Image (cartoon, rainbow, N blue to C red):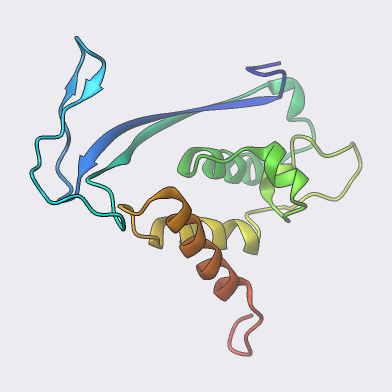
Length: 155
C-alpha cells in the first residue's frame, strides 16, 4: 500500500501569488517566500495565497479491481484538483467518488463524480482565493448548500 497505509496518495505542488496574482519569489537559500508588497495589511484578506501548480496521484493497483476507468479518472480528479482526504469525506458520510477505494467488496459505490463532488469543486474554485481559511470555508459551505439545494429547474 502507498503512503499512510492506504490504497492512494496525492501530492500537490504549490507556489504563492500576491494580492495582484503575481508569483511571489521563493528564496531557496532560506526556504521562505519573499513578498515585497507594501499594501496596508487587512484582517479580511491575505497579502499572498497558495497557488495550485500541479498534482501527482498514485493508486495501488491491488485496490482497483472492479472499478471502471471513469471511476478511477473521477477519483484522481477529486484528489488532484482539490486537497481532499478520503478518510474525512467517509467520516462525514458525504456521497462522494472518494469512497470507492475504501468501500467494502460488493457495496454500492458512485459510478462517477457525485452531485456533492461537483458542488465541492465548484465552490472551491468559485471562492475568493485571498480570504483567510475560515472565511473561505464559510463561503464554500454557503455555495455548496446553494448548489445541493433541490431546485425545480435542476435535474
